[in-house]
Amino acid sequence: MTHLLPTRLQISPARHRYFAMAVLAACSICRAAQPDILWKSDFSALSPGPIEGAGPSTVIAEEGTLRFLSKQDLATEVLFSEASKNATGLIDYRSQVRFRYQDNCRVFIVAKDRGLGRDAAEYLWYYVGIEKDGVGISCHHLKDREPFKGDPRVATSIKFKDVGFSNLNPDTWITVAVDVGDKVIKARITQENGENGEWQFPVFSGTGGSRLVAYSPIDVSEFFIEQLPHPVTASQ
Image 1 (tube, rainbow, N blue to C red):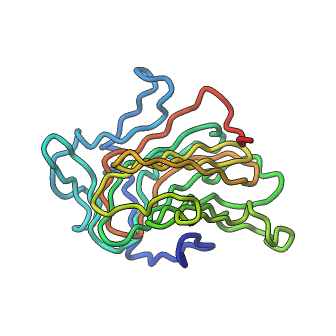
Image 2 (cartoon, rainbow, N blue to C red):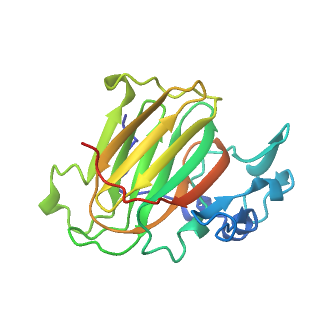
């Protein structure tokens, strides 16, 4: 799995598109109705077709009653960046995405985005990488890597074949829930056929928001951030 854990995200400015205005229009802030939901996408509020501010290959698509965001090119897309705004103190939350891919799966949930409390190490954020044959975490832009050589908090990956989990199937809906705690990140993956697995990764202390980065063509039907009622801690 050569691309699962990028140490530095290489993005061409011309191909790096933030959907600040379009995504903000497509999303609901649900604090009043649902106190635990901090941020949630709502594609039903948009008409099928092009998204204002996005490229021609990213549109709102529709299948029956389901509307979803469809990204059909190889450009790197940073999605739902509004979800990370002013979230420097966020901790003990769940970031969940429901997506499907075609040929190549390269999806990253960003966690602890530009947050606070980095006492052991100075960094920008964490990537939780999902590919068809594995999942892992990577600490992005660690200021001083020398003291942490070999530390699993810098980068750790798991191949599904090694843990008895099936590779992710293309053209099926996959749900990934990432629980973010001060010193641990847990990733739970549920496939369309009901198969599910959960893995935990030690991380450096720190808070911060969440967003989605997609390298490959994908469809996204759901993305939300939920405040959990309990601390996220490592399981024994």
